[in-house]
Amino acid sequence: MTVLDDLIDALGPDAVLVGVAIGERHRSNASTTGRALPLAVVYPSSTQQVSRILAICDRHRQPIVPQGGLTGLAGGANAAGGEIALSLERLSGIEEIDADAGTMTVLAGTPLEIAQRAAEEAGLLLPIDLGARGSCQIGGNLSTNAGGIRVIRHGVTRDNVLGLEAVLADGTVLTSLNKMMKNNTGYDLRQFFIGSEGTLGIITRAVLRLRPLPAARLTALCALETYSDVVALLKFAQRELSGLSAFEAMWENYFRFNAEALRLTLFERATPFAVIVEQDVGGTAEDKDRFEAFLGKAVEDGIVTDALIAQSEKEARTFWSVREGHAMDQRLPGLVNLDISLPIGRLDDFARDCEAALRARFSNAHVSFFGHVGDSNLHVAVWIQNRGEHELHEIDTIAYDLVRKYNGSISAEHGIGTLKRDFLDHSRNEAELAVMRRIKRAVDPNGILNPGKVLPV
Ligand SMILES: Cc1cc2nc3c(=O)[nH]c(=O)nc-3n(C[C@H](O)[C@H](O)[C@H](O)COP(=O)(O)OP(=O)(O)OC[C@H]3O[C@@H](n4cnc5c(N)ncnc54)[C@H](O)[C@@H]3O)c2cc1C
Image (cartoon, rainbow, N blue to C red; front, side, top):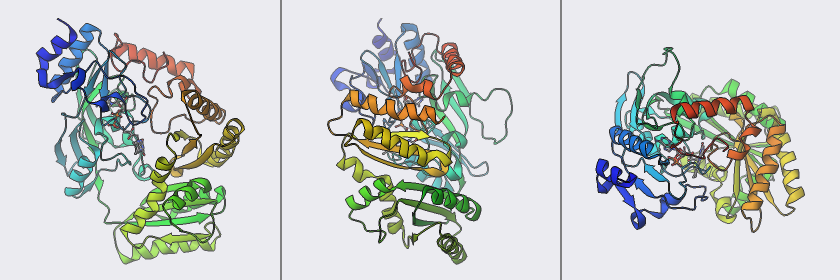
């Protein structure tokens, strides 16, 4: 029997698609770097089925690639020709919301937005949030340890996971659906699976932390003259705004390009930096007064040159539309978006050095910067005309060599996948890489789980 015969036997023909029945979308994630269609796509609808699939693939030494919502940006969910994709989309649903424990137990294939809505209907907040919320899945969020726009308040995905269930390469089901904040009983196995991009196991369930739903959110857009002012405003906001829930900075190029593309004149003069500050509040009139007083003091102290407070949700969305930069993505097709991480105080030094280095090689490059500055995360947006694979590699090399010089991280949130795999040693030392390889060999001795991802070959 071939591996496909065994899989069809175990799951039934409806759950194993081959050949022309496979949808084109299984070719690549949102990085658009995937080329091949998988040999087959399997659609398990229970943990037991995931276990049977992996046991079969392990016996046949058949490589298998987990696919969530396919919104990943590092190539991690792309299958090479001859590999089988395991789609989590039929393993979807909220199993439980425990209001006393403040937890949600959810199947891995549940789209993030569905989970967020279920929490809200129960009067609670699921703090994991990112632009791809409509398509990405909880399992994908855990596997990439997704960041997003609320990290400054509630941490990265890892900080919001209390328990999980995962299936190992040989089909072993590891169930650890812990709901407690405190549990010091030996090794914390969930951490192996969070952020390992499907190379150590397939996540099938998770217990997520929920928080009280904020009654209201106050949003301001600030103009600032220098990066020192940006850092000063961050420190001031961290001290004064108890529910600080976002602090997003845009460097001049990025802010101007997106505001102009959206035909928005937000400030009277060009501003070297623009920052969105957001605070979760109880919704009283005093909250608004305190927020206004905070901004007033920032202007008085010369940290901020101008500030706009959103008077409605629509206005807040307008500020965010500049930051989300969809206009830039549309107008500059093939835009490269690097997500790096550096000590907060060095972000602007890096931005200057990086822009100079990129321009020295590509004189007409459009280079701009934005980031979740409160989380030490900088995004570098680079566009050059007629960019091919070779130029992409050059851009990566220029930027990541500089990241190494600054002792930063080549991936703040998108993960390693295949796109950053060969630069992993820029942020991890040989001893760390050796331990990663030993862990991989221990849990997946036949190397069937998402081969060629994360670890340099
Ligand atoms: C518009 C847009 C905005 C984005 N914003 C952000 C952002 O702010 N912050 C951020 O961090 N990322 C962001 N991303 C990247 C992406 O959305 C996240 O990485 C997301 O967590 C991926 O989830 P997914 O379900 O789409 O995973 P996929 O892309 O399907 O897979 C990602 C990786 O996880 C593995 N995987 C998927 N499901 C499982 C599973 N159940 N078990 C084991 N492995 C699995 C895959 O093999 C792959 O290696 C954005 C992407 C887009 C397109």
